[in-house]
Length: 107
Length: 157
Image (cartoon, rainbow over all chains, first blue to last red; front, side):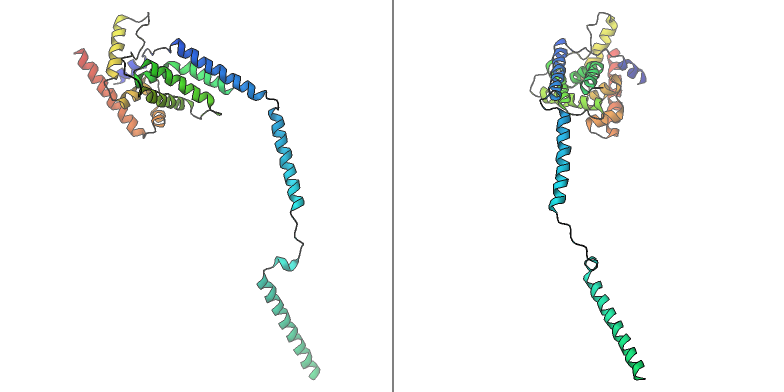
């Protein structure tokens, strides 16, 4: 089996006919031509990229002008339940405080 | 290195292998030639090169060869170069015999032997190219080589 593998490795492969070589070579030349045209356009690639960055920057600037920033409120940051419970606790503590004061004055 | 330059170098290094592979699939000269041309057109039109170039190009040649071959008549094209002036007559007879016997094998077995033994593909590369499990590829190769050996033995007897 190994001998057969060794023999097969030395197989005389057929060369590609000239006309195929010419056809493929022509394809290579056409591809090179396309590439040259791509990089020598009226507006060069670097200009395209530069314009893209400029538009991106302008977009961000415009966005920040258009979107309103909400005013800061410490209560607005807390959820509604927390605000109410806070109020309830404070009113209760006031009540206790006044009761205590009344008791003391009654004495 | 430029993409086109890379493809050109690949073509120069692998053109014989690709042509033999295409011939082993179709046994038709025109189909094999067209398959090679189609594969390189496809490769040149890609914006980026594939990561594993060799299995990709061989698969392109395979697909193109099979597509093209369906519409053509079968011919008895020799697989190996038997016209080389430096070749001895006994070598010529041997390669003619091996070339004929390879076509007695199943398509999968022949293809695997051509890729592995002639073009030094790994089993993994063949499995990638054929999109088949590696174990199947190994079994095609072993079975094909065994059959070929037996057939050569019978011919000698």
